[in-house]
Amino acid sequence: GYKPREYYEKDEELHQVLTQIGSGVFSPEDPGRYRDLVDSLINFGDHYQVLADYRSYVDCQDKVDELYELQEEWTAKAMLNIANMGYFSSDRTIKEYADHIWHIDPVRL
Image (cartoon, rainbow, N blue to C red; front, side, top):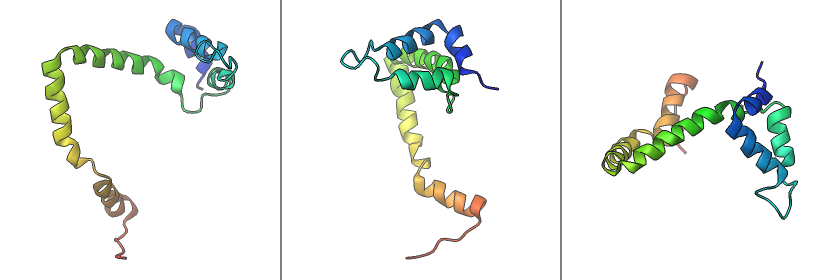
């Protein structure tokens, strides 16, 4: 099964940041504020597998940072993203679910 502590122990950066959060580095006025949160991630299941996703998230963010430095390429990709965004609408998604998954017809109000 999933063992979040292994991710915490194997990834030096993840270990450092969780230790800092848990010890109050980012909340000096209330050092214990995030201790339970960190404890739940490391010791009590990490239900959403945040620790498992951490490294791939950071690696992907590094690629985003590199691309952002290439302003012309970044702008082109941003424009393509905006141009294709129309397809991803909640109305279309709900209609597709209704048609293909739930097999229901709309009811006019």
